[in-house]
Image 1 (cartoon, rainbow, N blue to C red):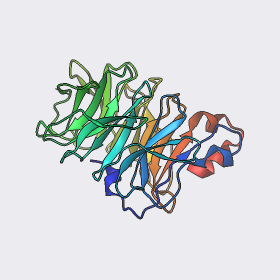
Image 2: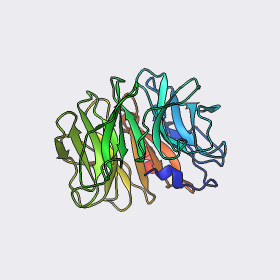
Image 3: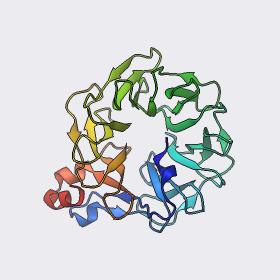
Length: 304
């Protein structure tokens, strides 16, 4: 369920960010370097730091780094796989999934480091945690019901609640800003599309209906759109669509594959994984700066 865990340790994975300056060269910068696999970035609530998973310590652990680059700080220390970090809204804690308990469960750890806390203990595999905007609840996907569905658990710990009950394949949850809905990917319609579910009622709505494969939704904090990855074009690319459905807009278009989008706190940038370079990297496109810059034509050569 986690694409990062299948990456070779010899692959160079780097995290990139876009600046909002006027030249094309300044709209992209590299944050992490080296021969390790660095991936699955997640901004801190203030946008100043990035949490990511990396095998630079020998196996996948959670790290943080300033968004402008610099020295990375190791947050988790485990012989197992720690991956898919997501920052708490108050900026103090990171949730992640880990195999340190013998199977994949959901854990949290203070950003400053310390003792990890296990939130889920079911024998089913739990993956891809995502914090609600109010900081009270964590959504994740799990096969504990026999099929992959979306579940939630209190951030303080406690009993998990099943949110979806599809035939199978409900994964990668992303909360709406108000917390009343969760976007997820599912093959319940015959192929993978983006869906939403209303928390409390379990009512689902299909957002994308293209026959292509649509995955990895990320709900914009300003509630205007959901970013997702799709192979509906020549190659897998990043697209956006209104949460209620409608016309999808292609954001990236490259011969390589782009996937795993995540919105920045201000809803102006989208981070995504890509193999468009010689390696599998993480890039960030600054939508506001790119569209408003007088050098947009030059910027397009970086992304399209």
